Image (cartoon, rainbow, N blue to C red; front, side, top):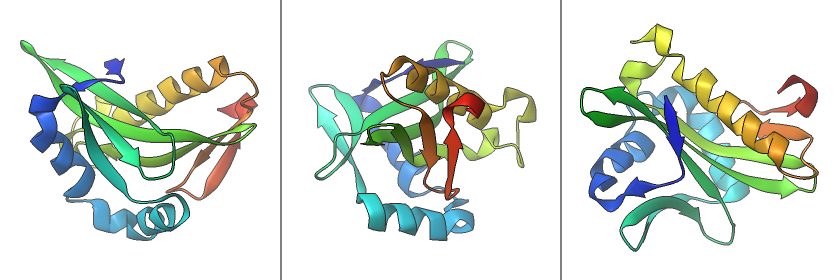
Length: 146
């Protein structure tokens, strides 16, 4: 699995499907709605020829996860995060392609776990960050256990 903060604009439809038309989003509706109420509604923004997720009034970062499938890197997941306090990095929105979710498809890929591990690694490099907050889960994880 590889990670990037960049996604080509030509992959907009794929990102829209993953973020806004995910077939399993009903299972997480209350968490999604709570995140939207607390932080704002995510939207796709085109910067030059690249895509990112933005939330009005907030500086957020987008991290994309890719799996190599043949000659192409397949978008497997996305997470949107921001610093909410001096010591907290909050994961505001996240999605994993249904076929890569643990309950449905390629369980051995562990896409969500690997994305969270990557965000943990990012958090460790940001001065002052001690906790990760996961909006959908309604929990805050101390950095030592992240």
